[in-house]
Image 1: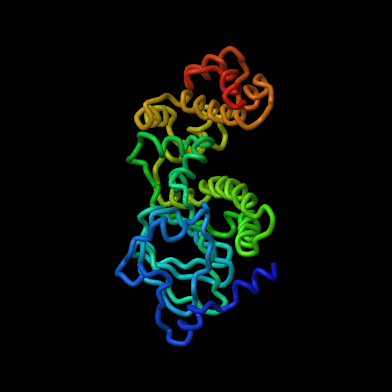
Image 2: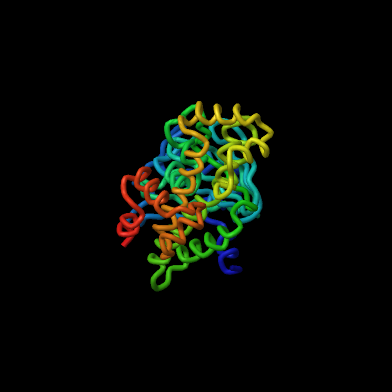
Length: 319
C-alpha cells in the first residue's frame, strides 16, 4: 500500500511543467482543441481497462468521452464541474460518468490523487449497472422499463465512500496490478473488473435513494416498501405503514403500474426467485418458501406465467 502511495505521489513530467507554470499541459493532442470528445483509440491498445493518474497543479479542461469513466479519489479531494454544475469529491468517493457526460477538473494540489479507470467494453455503462441491480429490485425494474415519467437516471453518478465500503480495497489491488505488472496481472484485472461492477451495482440503490428522497412520489415509496418487505407485505400493511387510505393505495398502484398490489408483490418475489435459481444450488421448493410462496404449484404457475418457462428450465439455463 505504501509502495503504491509513494508511486502515485511521484511527479510526472507533465506535473512538473504544470507545477512550474500553473498552466495546463495537454496529455493528448486532442486536448489542444476546445471541449474535445475523447475516443477509445486513445487508450485501449490490446487491453480492456485503462488506468491513469490525473495530473496535478493545473485545471483539466472541459471534455467528454466515448466510454464509461470512473474517477476514484485516492487521497485528498477533487472539485469537478459536471454538465455545468460543481461537485466536490473526497477521499474514497467515486464519480461514474457515462458516455456523453461533460466535465472539467479544477486544479489538484499535492495531496489530491485522482485515479481514472476507463472501460473499453461499450456494454459497460450506467444503464448496464442499473439493469444488474434491476434483477434484484422492483423499484429499479420499473424505473428502467416503460415508466419513463419516473426516470431518475442521469449520465453520471457520485458514490460516496460510506456507500462503497468494500470498493477502495478492490480498486487499490487493481491499480497495483496495473502499474506493477506481475504474473497473471491481466487475468487478475479482468476478474477484478467483474467484481468491481457488481459492487458498484450493489451500491446504486443507496446512492439513488438520495435522489428519490428529493421526490415526494407516493408510488416510489410503495415500490421501496415492497422491495424491502416483499415476503410479508400486504396491501393493508402497506397502507398502514405509509399512512395511506387502502383504496387510494390500491388505485395508485393500478394507475401507475397497470397491475394490482398483489401482482407487484408477486413480481418482486419472482425476481428474487429467479436470481436465486441463477446464482445458488438451493432446492426449488426451498427457494419458493424463502421468497414467500407457500404453495409450490402456485409458485410454478406464476413463474411460468412471468418468465415464459418454469423454474426447472431456468436452472437448466444456468448449467
